[in-house]
Image (cartoon, rainbow, N blue to C red; front, side, top):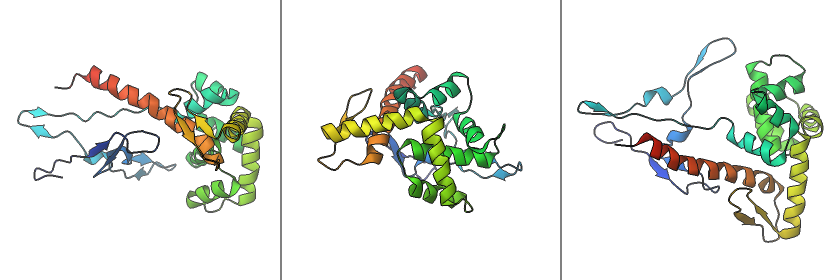
Length: 227
């Protein structure tokens, strides 16, 4: 922050391993927004404290843009997963759709959706029972590991079998060739004899998200016609 209380974050074009942009001092790409919990109570967020600085009679504008569940959409597309593709095609929230199936409810609570969301990404990126449980137990301290095991078996075998099949194909390919490749830019990650299953599952998806976003940044810049 300068003497005029203006924040000047640094944007790092190659700040992440997946080549997605990052920011620092402060990290303005990961500032939480205010939300409401299941009881309607406000959960504070910090994003509202930032606004465009005024220069004389002109106020700059803060432009925020993001994709809706980009990496899960990429996962559904490359894996040709019928359940996820159907949810997106019908305009349903995929996390709520998964929560409905996992917990056998018609309308999931915010907690059930939140659990399904965490579960979705952890399972989609190849995490095992112990790692998924370790992630979930932070926000859901009462969840047991054997329940996570049952949910994971259902997710892999019934709900998102297409993702499970794609993961197995990717792992077999990486074991045979010693590298993995992104579906859009065809960049490669070489393992040098140490294939890591989680990287095999997550790197192509996250990198594809970066490919899409980095192209979009150029388009947004052109469309906004910056002064």
